[in-house]
Length: 317
Length: 148
Figure (cartoon, rainbow over the protein chains, first blue to last red):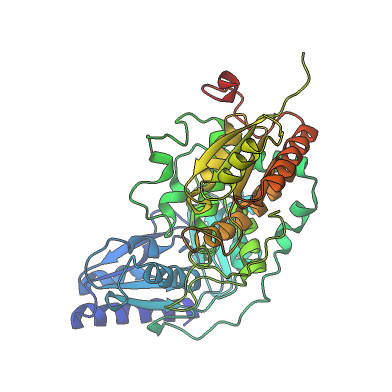
């Protein structure tokens, strides 16, 4: 039995256990999606639901997004980044620790469907996976792809693949990757300012402002988002490029120092915009200035909620 | 076409830089008239969206000025603001906004001379950048264009 099946079995067993013992009223996990390469969120409330729970490399959404304002005891199936988001929810007082049970899944990276489509543009009808490869098939074709070739970009720079804080791990720890050196944005930073402005405007030119990235994000729990404010209205309702850019800049700033690079925003984007580019730039500043990584401790304070009297800021004259 | 006159939106803390501007005026120190002041209770009140809004509506530059670290009327407002500025400055610089269009400074209410020098410097560096054509809305509805 491969590692994935072992984890799936462990999740199901533990979920039944938690529900029957009353330690959780709902187990939030993933089930097999209705289309290939997708795992859908699933709320198991009864023991018989639990056999629908699965673990796969297609579980790209961040389930910690369901925690804020939820009542009752919750068990959460969480990979490294999701577990850190859940810890963030607790540190930001969005969910009580005593109501949360984190079922941590050591994760060796998730598959990016866009990269799979780049390898095989024909429609895919079925996708199966083993521990290190996926097999996609459609009409008259079948193809094996190594997972490491189609991992999401954020999974390749992931700093905490095994959940750092969890109530229980569902499998053996996975080895850590090299520390993130932000080499993926090095080319971007080498460009001239004018080129960078063109790059970022170009990056979001397809944005529909559907706000799926915001809705998928476990950090975005404000009762009224700045994009929906009307008095004053900060963003126009049309798809003016400058309004769109403002949305992405402010979304990035709101997530700065809190983002765990789960990539749910990019997963949710219907037009495949690399919205995390803004977060990458900010993550780099946060690391450089305050060497802070979110979600590593229950008592951690996000860097924008605290200060040091000697914070270096030479640009302020 | 007349020579380009920059329009700068200035966000001043009520307790220090706003006072410095007042003192500079009372002391008859001359400084350029190119900026429009928005008075804030504290730089901690400054939300990054104010700055983006100013640029979006056609400002050529933005100048933010508050109390020196340690001198905040509300004890720590400017310390918190400074952390926000660090990220905002890095972000805007990275996405390609000319850093000379955005100025942060600490000016106490006694520093009228520093205010005068900084005002001249801000306006001159924005003037050197030229009109802001790339980081604003193409279609300015109720922007500075009408107000100026």
